[in-house]
Image (cartoon, rainbow, N blue to C red):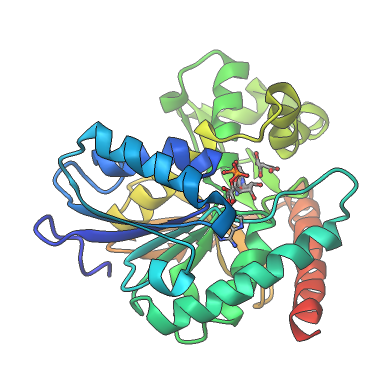
Length: 333
Ligand SMILES: NC(=O)C1=CN([C@@H]2O[C@H](COP(=O)(O)OP(=O)(O)OC[C@H]3O[C@@H](n4cnc5c(N)ncnc54)[C@H](O)[C@@H]3O)[C@@H](O)[C@H]2O)C=CC1
Ligand SMILES: O=C([O-])CC(=O)C(=O)O
């Protein structure tokens, strides 16, 4: 349970990468009450690296200039031990971005050290009940590293964001079948937040009817729909010159709203694998989950998986275990 979800006690929300692009879209959503409710007081604890503290101060000036009635306090810091203090909710968007010519291993190496240090800090000073969403890439593996170095924080309290992939998939089903997004249901994201993810529409419906035939059948889905979702982040980056930020912030809000307040719909989140669907323990894997409120969720069981789906789930599982080996080797080095 998220014990301080009580309108009279401020919810302590920490955001790392707070001077970055995603945070710039996310902070007003949180401070306005769009995520945790219109009567939930909020204390913000904002974490950045030292060179970005001036920029962070500018963001804080703007937050104050918004005069958000729910915002009780704002802390600016470059010290994770200060930022995570008593945090109820922690959003980790601060990470080292991929630079031209960087190999995936280099990206993992840069971020392993960040999430290792933040895991130690979280373990030391955050509430044992803290709910964490890892956003910085490679997000599933960063969540694994964080959890590894925060052994007293329950593994199920740490998640990684795949709600953006879910929203993208729902948006594309709606666009391609000519309906509104609220007429689409049953889309799930399995696996890694990477190009190996499996956006699954085999049980999706459009106005209560199977979506698959309306999308052109399995072959079209395999050749066009699935790659579109898998590569959507790269496509936005190419078009905008910056990675998705507005849609990422919106998805973080959706993720936290579902997780903390509960959701009548099944949603996708990357969570600690528990052996469900033959995904062995040891990685953070996106599953369809049922959020029952108060920060509790369960992985939806009993979904029949045909050969088509199994092939994708197995590929993304393999990628995550390869990332796990690399990350843990780097942690030990
Ligand atoms: N999981 C998902 O669905 C998505 C993940 N992302 C990832 O989210 C991350 C953030 O994206 P943007 O905000 O657009 O990037 P950005 O580059 O605009 O901001 C990142 C911020 O993190 C800060 N930072 C770097 N190292 C830090 C550390 N050790 N502690 C605290 N802050 C630190 C930087 O100073 C920078 O201000 C990136 O890794 C991006 O790839 C982006 C979109 C979707
Ligand atoms: O690749 C990136 O940096 C951004 C990202 O994760 C996405 O848009 O899905």
